[in-house]
Length: 143
Image (cartoon, rainbow, N blue to C red; front, side):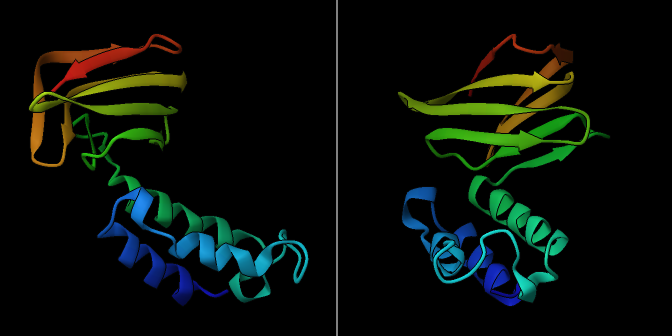
């Protein structure tokens, strides 16, 4: 596996939903522990590069984007539960379709999150003031 495998897989998966995107799992099967060590991928620089290229797959599959300047967080509009991390905090978001809109439950597992807006693709909810989400206090937003 090399960076090109991951980059092309990430590009393809950014166009699909999680359920339709098998590219990364197909790449990972090469390092299943039977044929090759799952902990050392020489083509990716042995250790560090694999973790960095794998993060790109997370971003491609979830559409996650965070701006600390704008205090905004965005995801692809798709049902499921996804991990996020912004450098100051990390957690998960659960999204589900509700009528003509979406319901998102955002949970901070570690740290503190400040938001002025939250979006799912083109649907963005802007808050009148910065909200602060504390650890383990789920926050629900309807968009």
